[in-house]
Structures are given as structure tokens and as C-alpha cells.
Image 1 (spheres, protein in one colour):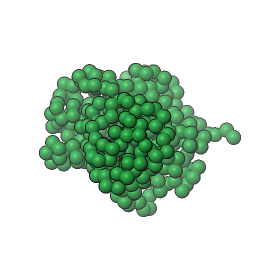
Image 2 (cartoon, helix red, strand yellow):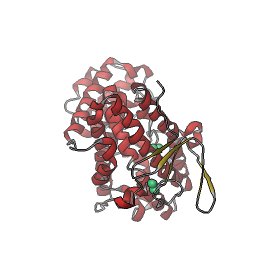
Image 3 (cartoon, chains in turn yellow, cyan):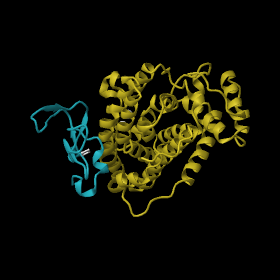
Image 4 (tube, protein in one colour):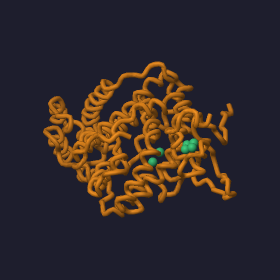
Length: 318
Length: 67
Ligand code: FES
Ligand SMILES: [Fe+2]
Ligand SMILES: [Fe+2]
């Protein structure tokens, strides 16, 4: 993947240093004054070192101590911001009440807009900016696997096995999305459209990688997973109908059609098997399950509102 | 040390999860084979993808959801 276009002094300095392999003290010193967009793009790019090749950047920088220091500062700021947005629910049990809580907290819905009113151009724009997530899908969650006890680990593997096509690359979810993009005339290589992605997309992806990379945040990672799966089947049905209304390629429709049935399974597995097992292992993680679940809904709501306002659409509610 | 690992799980208010390969016969006698490692069989009978759950149970009034 090519490095993105810088969004400020921090990413300017960081990308220059990544290319030249210079020392990174200048990066550390430009952290404090970074704008939210600049900071989010810097963190997203530092996270990419753990996932894939960046053109012109030596692979061993993945574990460079100064870059890890910069990553830690940016991650701490992100986590503080996410926690500041969150108020814990009271008098609820995660495994009994998550679905009802999600139903009450669902925010602005891009699927509703795509279903009824979106233009072809808007849907293709959405496909490009969402590709930052859909072309990796469950990858950050896989990092949680070795940190779990036996039951939660087996349960998460059971869910992930389906996400990854149960051994068949043609059913692997992020590959289904790549096929949908190609059929729609888009470039499906990872990160191609990062320059179009708003802050909200960067935050969504940064939060998932943050939760996945830190064992301490495994509760948040699995709460996020549960809430993500629990808000997928019904919106995926609306996406299918919207894409069919616009005559978009069958391959793109297929991606969403697969998620209607797959996520009707995954949401139940996530709550009743995986999160239940995690809580049996360590009941103290309930607080972070809720934090992760909230963060998932909140970031999706922020993303939906940013796209709807970009298109000058009155808020569409699910 | 053996951990309970049921082949079927009844989800409160929602589907039945079914692990492994099975065929579900619909009211017309047509058999639908499972295609994924775990499948969700609709119990509210309101799914648009019968016999599989598509999440529709979540928008039903509480009394119409399977117990
Ligand atoms: S049980 Fe989920 S749609 Fe019927
Ligand atoms: Fe998926
Ligand atoms: Fe899923």
C-alpha cells in the first residue's frame, strides 16, 4: 500500500521519516499540536505497519521503539476520547440485555438512506470509504484469540472460521467485498481510497485495531464485535435492496446478502457463546464489553452523520 | 474437564443455533442443507430467508418472539 497524503504537520513529518528511516524524535515532538484528522491518520498508518507492506517503508519499523512510543501516545489519546464519550448503562446484563440495548441506541442509518434514496454515486463513494474496514473486516479481532480462555477462544474461532470462509477463499468475507469492488469498477487493493476517508472512518478503524492489539482491552474488542454483529443483518438486507434498486453489480450485492444470514448467526454466537464465556472467565470484563459495544454504535453513528451531512441529507433513522 | 458443547442452542427471543451439517425440512417437505459451520434456524417464522434467521425476530413485538 502507498502512504496516504499527509493531513498536517504530524503526518508530514511521520511519512517523511518512514521513507527516509530517519530517527523519529521529530515525530514525537510534533504529536502535541496535531489536529484530530492528522493524529488519526498518523495512528492509522502506524497500525498499518502491523498489517501490511507500506511502499518504501522498511518492514522492521513495525517494532521500532520510537514509533511504538508515538503509537502509544496516539492510542492513549484515542482511548481517553472514546471513554469520555461513554456513559455505562446501569441495571443491565450484557448477555441478557445487549440486543434490546442495541435496539434502543441505534443511531443514524446509512443503510436506510441507501435502501430508499441514495444515488449510485453516493453508494460508490460509500463503498470506497468503507473499504478501509470491509477489506480487512475481522483481522483486528483475530489478535484477541490467543488471549482468551478455552471456551471463549473456541467460540471466537467458530465465528471467525465463518468470517474467513470456512477454508474457502472465495467465501472469505473481505475477499467477497474485494470482488464486489472490482465488479463495480473500483480498485480493491487495500488503502487505495484512504485519502477520501473522513476522520470518522479513521477513528472506527483505529478503535478496532486498538482493541485488538491490547490484551488489556480484550473485553472492549469482544463487546465491539457483539455490537457490530448485532447491527448487521437487518441493515444488510436494506443494503441489498438499495443496491438492487440502483442496478449495482451482483458481486457487491452478494457481499451484503452473505451478511444477512452470516451475522444472524454471528450475533448470537458473539453474545451467548463468546461474551458469555469471557464473563464466566472474568466477570470484571463486563464493564469493557459495554464500553466496546457503545463505541461501535457511537462511531458508526458519527460516521453515518458525517456522510449524510456531506451529501446534505436530513438524518435517516433506522 | 469435558466442557459442554451442545449441537443446538436455543437463543432467547431468537433462532436456534445448529452446529455442523444438517438438513432442515420446510412445511412443503423441501430440505434445506446447512452451508456454514454454525447455522441459525428461524424460530419466529417471520424471516424473509426461511428456514434461516435473518434478524427479523428483533423487530417483532415481544409476545411474537420465540421464548
Ligand atoms: S428467529 Fe430470527 S428471524 Fe425468525
Ligand atoms: Fe463478515
Ligand atoms: Fe459477522
